[in-house]
Length: 221
Image (spheres, rainbow, N blue to C red):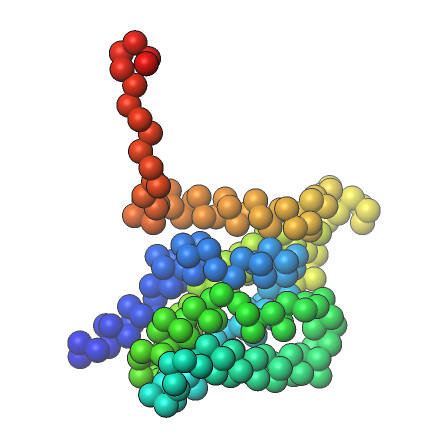
């Protein structure tokens, strides 16, 4: 009975409180680059989560047989092999979205989130727990990407998943698309705002200051 709550905590903590993007600031390159639409955000999220879960399971199974001196090389080879499979599947069945994602699917190989969870957790835990942790982190990453992608697509084009929700001016409607939302800086600002909002609600996530400013006397000296 005691293991079930621990597994539940392992799964749920990365969703909000230990979210890898908003707390650990991992995987933000793709969070900024592929969130111009919900479709690309969903595809990237599903791809990274699949790679993360499968690589965590494989590495956990063989963890006692990986020499410490070459562990990173082995992990990267496993992740890269899975990424190639995912990339080929996307090109076969979702070619248009694959083109829009460009090189970012391939860059999952070096994504800090994937390598971080395989190195820090999967290498030290049994397969079941390692895969649950990977799934939780993948869903936490996905939650951020889908939220930012939804905001950028809605206010940048007036659509969600290519469904027109806000009638644009060129279609005779009232909404003027905010072109800035489809540019990279908007992703940066939205992600920064999300981090600020979460840390305002959860003050324990705020890092301690690196230094304490010197105190000044009454005369200002």
